[in-house]
Image 1 (cartoon, rainbow, N blue to C red):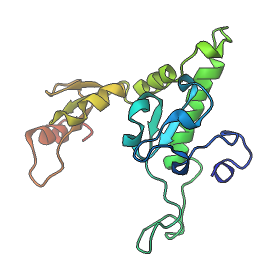
Image 2: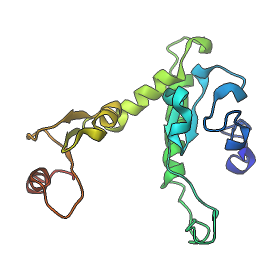
Image 3: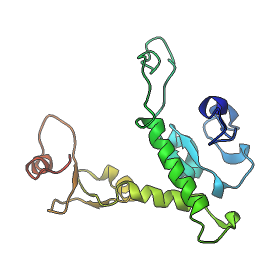
Length: 186
């Protein structure tokens, strides 16, 4: 898999672990790698198998280039793929480059990499995703995630709100009506 994803050995240097490498049936673990948990970044489209390592995880959309079954609409069947600048893999690559840069290049003169923790870098990067956004929620089930991604969250509307998270149903809610009227992202 590593040869397919990184033929020039530029990013992974052969260090890709797949579902076939796991030692437990329903969970994935870092017991199959040599290295410290504080230096591991995990990319996976199945978040719940990494319960012990959520801070190391970058959840991502499933990238389905090849068809899994006859009726599966894969990118190869659609005769398309992501562009170099757009799509799931491009987005994840940018995040990885940013994390790598912050971990290795922003050293402040401290070259002791053993004392660094990639999870702290990842937390910083996560908090930048929705930085500057104030989101008002009709329901609070996404509120914690939005806060982890750097948003300021509220359950009430006011002029400082930039986004509204509302239920997508046939009936227009008071909050979604307010968002449309005030030209807020919905």
